[in-house]
Amino acid sequence: MKKRWRNLFFVFGLAAVIVMLLTMKSDWPQVCSVLVQAGLLFPLVLLLWGIVYLMNACSFGLILKNADCQKVSFGRIFQLTVSGYALNYVTPLGLMGGEPYRIMELSGYMDRKKAASGTILYAMMHICSHFCLWSTGVILYMMLHFLSDSGKYPLGRGMIIMLSAMALVFIWVLYLFSLGFRKGFVVKVFGLLCRMPLVRRWAAAFRKTHLEQLEAVDEQIASLHAKRRAPFWGALLLEYLARVFSSAEYWLLISLLVPGFTCFDGLLVLAFASLFSNLLFFSPMQLGGHEGGLAIAAGGLQIPGAFGVYAALVSRLRELVWTVIGILLMKLSIRCGKT
Image 1 (cartoon, rainbow, N blue to C red):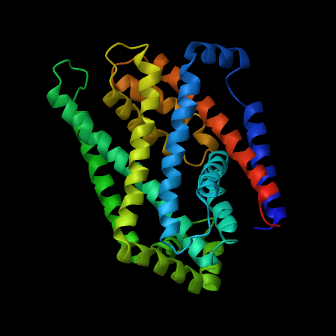
Image 2 (image 1 turned 60 degrees about the vertical axis):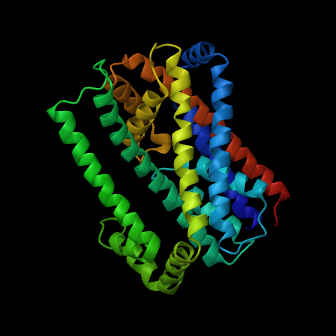
């Protein structure tokens, strides 16, 4: 990537972080109070997410390795992983900053089509892992209801209808992912965009101009799935395990305040809070949705919503720290990268 593009991504990310700091709803005394209450748990949570990002980087590395890209070091892949997520956190609509940045950086090591197919495939695996996590949450909740005698996991008629509807939607979406992995999905996504208001003209013009390149990306994605199944499923499994492992954050933060809060409860809180906050994907860092989702998820497990808000604030600060780290790693790549 040209140095001026690296600088542009860096300045954008830095400006977004500054704006978010200036517009935080929590005042600084409250932030300090939350950090004091968290104590040594906060650096532990930061370390935990370092491990999560390592797992993400291993997944991304498997995909790139099987896209015939052998020149990228694991340290570089880790930097692209963290910096890409940092840009996604501060960008409205999610995958509008991190993915273009990764593609442009990887184009210096490999063919642009392979860089695009590998990056898009990894992004779709990350999204697919969310649906796998949410499906796990539905199944786990129903299992705990039948295995627990405490009444902690109520399953009334309304809850049954809601969980059943969610399960059907998740199964349908995962089926669509399986089709996309086998046949590619980039051209079809642009076909859908061509029917949507506001973006239809841009999408139609882009598809007409770059149809050959889009079809080539789909071929690369389908080829990775068909010819190299073990690394493909290994990468998807790593993404899913990273999501499950990240639930330890809520178990650590809430278990000390709520006796009887188990690691399974932490997974349920993560699953349902993540589902709620991702419905507000258009908001940078899912502001508001993250906190509300955790409060609702905690309340569903008969835990005071205040504990959910506390965990959400600590989690938000953790996201902010790792976002700053990701932006700073971009600056490091500017110094070390090609011009």
